[in-house]
Length: 428
Ligand code: DOR
Ligand code: ZN
Ligand code: ZN
Image (cartoon, rainbow, N blue to C red; front, side, top):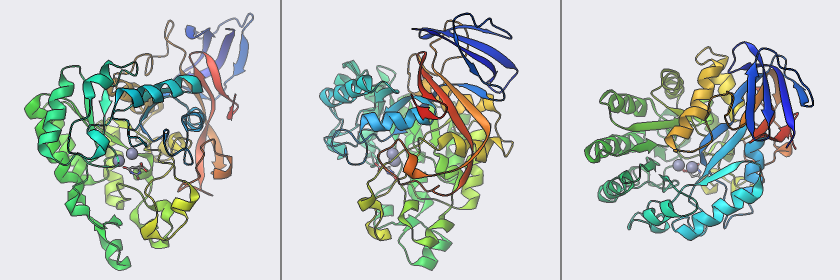
């Protein structure tokens, strides 16, 4: 493979540096490097980050290839600056066996745009009744370390306890979609002033917070790791902060959309804003931003949830829940966290690459930008301003809440082990 010289990029937002990629590896980082026979990328004013890592992506294959495939989803990931994504288990069939996780892993290898780490289901068929074959999924070629019934909550406390006990043996983690099912029966949006005015079934914050409280206590009791998916309320932040203060092995993620959008948008009845957990209030949004800034929330995860238009372009009550997010995630984080002064770019690298890789125990990603490391890199032009146009998405689905919205920043280049997957903002 040839050599690439990235010239004058601000590494992690710091001083401009030259970075030489040779084959799949970072060969040198220095203030000035001779180009020699390398292809030069002029990166004046651009930020160089480690390739982004998503702990929470729905790729939909097998079974819902009309929404997304591993190939289209990994293309969307590359456009968004990601070099690794964790593929959630709520596929058809469910990824609850070694066979299915190996299939997804193999499809990821074939895609070539982004590494795909399959997530295994916690329970058979996401039914919440019987533990799935966690050990076999871990021992398979896919090497599963993150398990989740995402889309559904592992609501049975005994099943949750057993799952935590089981994965402790191999340093695995249970990623919980915290939603108490009885408290959210018929729920259509956040429970609050807006749901009362619209007459839509409310989804109380306590439905999320009560499960998180239970699960941090269970994780502490078992001495195992729990990761909380898509925190959405100020109360959830308080519980995670308390659990961490106890020294318990608890981590948490927040989605870009919960950092930016509120339930006021539901007044439009546009199902593009229908998502699980629901968009909450301004108070929640501000608490989530603050928690991501102070490290209470460990990382950003997209919860990229592609749906075909026939599942979204219908009345609110019938619409599917979820939003695509891979291609806009970094821009939303720039708007909500960087341009507000809450995070600098080094901290963005921490929350979107280093920490998710550590939580997922993912090798070769979330590494420092220094000689000898795998060349998984993302180059960002922070001065760019553009309007989101889903027609141009690499994802097969178009269900973005940001259509027509101006967002800052653009990923100009993504490198996966030294190979450019994105050049000048387009798939290579
Ligand atoms: O909005 C969501 N969509 N939340 C989930 O938990 C599942 C996801 C999906 O699979 O569409
Ligand atoms: Zn979820
Ligand atoms: Zn999800």
